Image 1 (cartoon, one colour):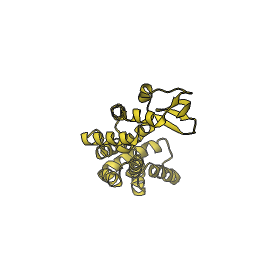
Image 2 (tube, rainbow, N blue to C red):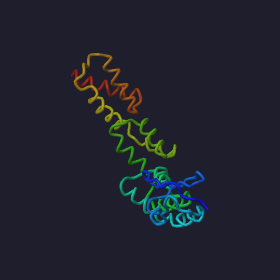
Image 3 (tube, rainbow, N blue to C red):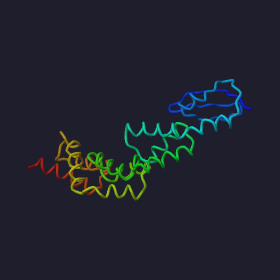
Image 4 (cartoon, rainbow, N blue to C red):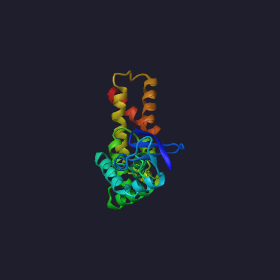
Length: 205
């Protein structure tokens, strides 16, 4: 039998610490059902098994709430459930339910993400962002490969116009810094240079 030494509410979960130094993260709604207080004697395994047995329904509801606010990748959704303290068994069941129902779809997410963010950033940056969000390598590559080169150049030109506004366009250093800024936004060097040259040519005309 253990004893509860601390109950701390953290962002997304409740942290329960025991007198043997171990701690358990519990999802807030399940903690409300299986509440413990500092000083309570407790059979940790039985207590944990009790709330984990009901975790799936609460985890599914939590995932639905998250996805109603914004679309997310499979990994993002699963990680947010884990962060809230849901056990891996419940997370796996929820993710299977969501993917089978089409509520989570990394291919759809990647396509929409590229379409939305492609107005401001180049394909290299978009690919990196998708990978950091947990989108698979092949899916991320396919998403950015679908970007029309002319569409990407047009977006780069619009960004170059903002970068070069009220600048001395006769100064080569201004051109170079603008192109470098576009490269940092994910455009390749050739696209960046072409975008800068297009803006400068329009200005001279």
